[in-house]
Image (cartoon, rainbow, N blue to C red; front, side, top):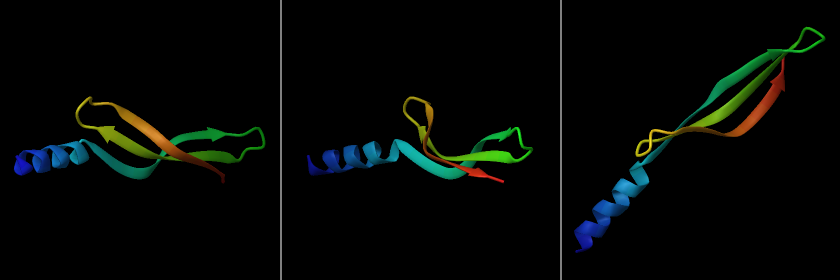
Amino acid sequence: MQKFFLILIVFALAGCTYAGPFVTHISQNKDGSLTVEKCMVEHNAFSGAVATTNCTQSKV
């Protein structure tokens, strides 16, 4: 029974993977500078959903 719960916990923790930060958006401002948005990317292997979290913007 303990092995079953251990395997269940391992699968629950392995369901989501994080990668990043990745550049998710680049836009040009009116003054000619660029705004770059970087986000952490989370992929849920069970549902196939991709989500972005912890986004930061920097002006270049």
